[in-house]
Length: 114
Image (cartoon, rainbow, N blue to C red; front, side, top):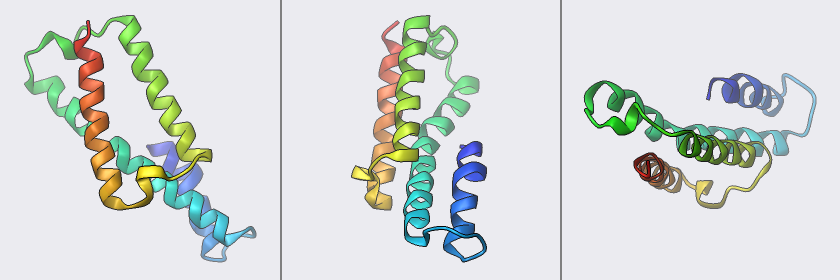
């Protein structure tokens, strides 16, 4: 999320505001998609950060390597979509929030599959 802000959103914002040269429409689209991707990752991040200290389930502390690889691959695919892909359900803020909650549930189910 940090790199998304500083390497994608900030430079595209500068282009769309006219501070750098480039296609403003394309920069705005890329920055918007990167912002929505950060919103997509917000709920899972908050859940697992809070859950690591408050949930007594061994799920959060003993994720097997296969499940961890699945989670990393899923996050990488979503990030790649955020960099070069299409909006899909991320078109609206409500869709991004619903997708974020769905992603949280999916990651919990993957972690539970130990």
